Image (cartoon, rainbow over all chains, first blue to last red):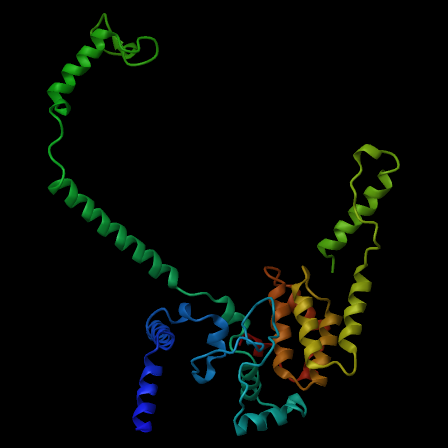
Length: 194
Length: 132
């Protein structure tokens, strides 16, 4: 009896709205992360502390960050050292001339995720963005073209060449803008445009 | 290193003298004493030379120094690197050199000049490591 009640309570607990909302937001983050927008969907701090693929980032403690204006971040990038990493750290206490180049690089990468050169390098994402913009502009142009052909009716008859000729003749006869404008450009003696 | 603040300070000193002759055209600059370049440098060298400097103080000092509108003098850099050695922190030493190189921006001649003055060989790496 009590086992059934406990099971029912557990089901209700798992279906309550706040829990579902949390699951939905987690699913959204996972979906974003598995796709193209991985770097955009998580902050760089969360990304950097993400060394062991954890779901939540503790924002109440100092976090690692890659910044050009803060060369020495609050915490090292790799915090949980394996056995050989700990040995390397011990070797660091001795003379640094004894370390090989690989060991020095390994020590650097333990404390820092990206070097200054890597931070500065930038990406080719702007080409993708620009290309996408042009594709959508082109598609919009096609839509506008379709609309022009299939939605709009004919233009008024007054825009036909004969009608425009008649209109122009009338404007000349009326002496429209005779000082600096339209009729000023018509030579009334020679009956032609100046 | 001539910093922007020092230049402004020098400007204010010359203007303060003009105040006695042209009271209408005076600007109200602060009359605080302006720190000279040498005082600035020695203050930072002393900061990093503290024998029991801890990691937090090293980070704080370095991040503050990089925040200034100047490239640190070689003697400050040397003092900071020695502090890294005392703290057994090779990664920070490399990072500091990278940061100073980055600070010089388009003036590519500053970093080699500093490396000549700072004897990096005792740290045990050549500068080619820093194309990492």
